[in-house]
Length: 193
Image (cartoon, rainbow, N blue to C red; front, side):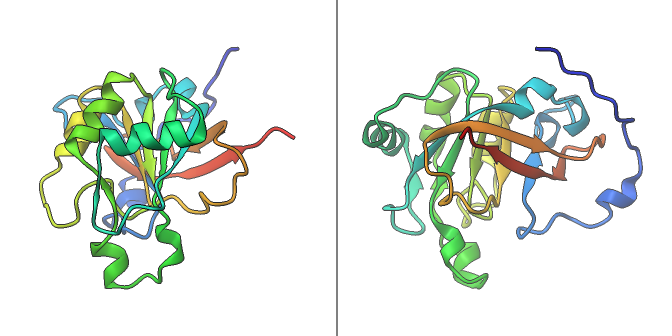
């Protein structure tokens, strides 16, 4: 399969004139953490149009980290194993909460140990249906650093992860072609009939 990008890279910073809200579905590229890292427009199209695996972690209490044992348990419950280059989607069930202070501060998040587990599985990307992949009480970005430094992009504030009726499907993540470390993104699950 061949991919050809027919869009012109934008340098219009007005697209990025405000900081992304935690209410926006967004993608982070390595340049967010890595000096001279690739920006959103440089992400390989093949990685943005790829197979995804959906891990159900809705049984976790809000505010609890997702570690390697949680990820392994979710794989076992679904009867599958994460494959190399897959986009791993972490369904923590946050869309059922109102967009209030609890939504922003008391969500499950990926631990550094969990990020290392996914890095060792050679995933292509990691997404979550919470405002942030990080511990909301920590203003550092250790999980972003662990993933982005290894070329693993991040999708945050996904929605409707309860709708797909299967654990594996094709995922399309289309951010604007901007030279930026982070951008809003449209994410679509492509479900075979």
